[in-house]
Image 1: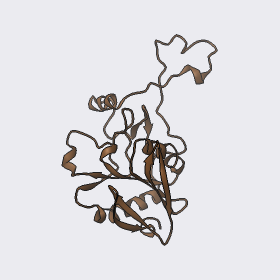
Image 2: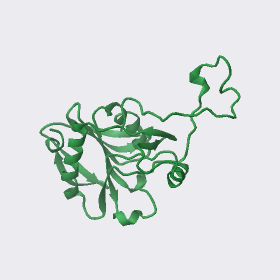
Image 3: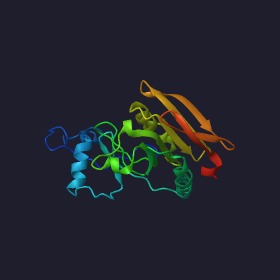
Image 4: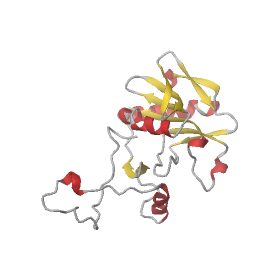
Length: 214
């Protein structure tokens, strides 16, 4: 999703804060991030303030830059586009690089989601955590974030299963059974192994790690 820490767009000091531009104030304390909600984010897009193809998304109330994908990320993503659809059973559908609403201040665009129902079921709304069976993030230079605060957020929101396609370590990490704001089970799958695709607690098939990481 991003390199190192999630990078926020430039913030603007609040003009009604008398201490914001006080002489001698340290720059770190002179600026105050202005947090926005999902609803306001949608209004900004609808008004044209944020273009629909703008390379940003909403993360914990702040606008965050999307990261340019390298060729290894692109190759693994292309492989998942091929191997995932045959395993998506009736009653579910695959959504690559589409938004999900998590709480009232976060709207990321995971690399892949498997979501309950048909596409037409989401006319007029965006999938939320209760609609999602599986989220997949393909991680190369974004590994620290995807295995850190992104992992924590997905666990806190109760995403049932989360995969990290770990390009640097050539394995797929499977996190499941969120409880108390954390995943209670973690299983890495490496070369020569196949990772189960679990939808609503039921295994619907397996994908060889070598089909995704090569």
